[in-house]
Amino acid sequence: MKLFEMRDFNLQVTEETWGLLPFKAILKRDKSRTKDTAFKEMLFIYYYSDIRSDYIYIVNNKDREREIKKDIGLPTDWTMDKVIQDAIAYYEHMSISPIAKLYKSSLKAADDISRYLEMTDVLLSERTANGSTVTTLATITGSLKSVPIIMRDLKAAYKEVVKEQIELEGRAKGSRTLNPFEDGLSFE
Image (cartoon, rainbow, N blue to C red; front, top):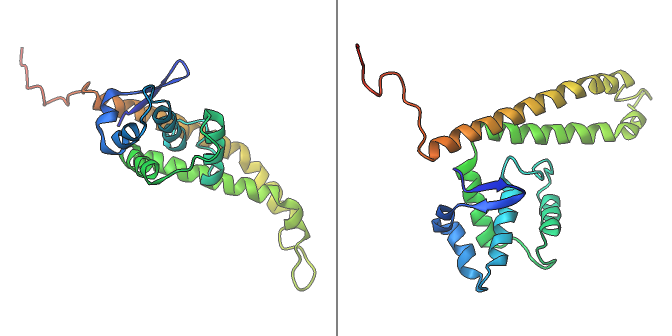
């Protein structure tokens, strides 16, 4: 479902988006003429939820919320209320595919691996009851050898997710490719 599009570093919200109940609630509660708060909240939803967001690598939701809020200029006392949470849940439900879900899980796994590698001093100091190390240096260096492969695979997965979203967005806009027999047969 294509509700948002980044064009020339500006978020474009499709007109149809405002007709969907979760987003209509955001627009309706902003009583200002310019609807600046509604637009910032939509920007927040995009950066918080969209797989193409530059913030999606922040797997801790509270950290991601704090960074986005600061960067887009939402007030410091602004919090995700039920209206925003409902809109995020709706957007994620309507825009996530099995491929995108798998990619998000891969980001979480990569973050876990990163935290593991950050703790090498603790891991090397852990000892068993008989005094030998719990985690060996060979285990850690073996993990390090896997990092470039993980990075390459994550890049390739990201490209596949974006490619899939472009294909799905094209279908949602009505540009559809017909299967060989859908358009009828022509024997001439």
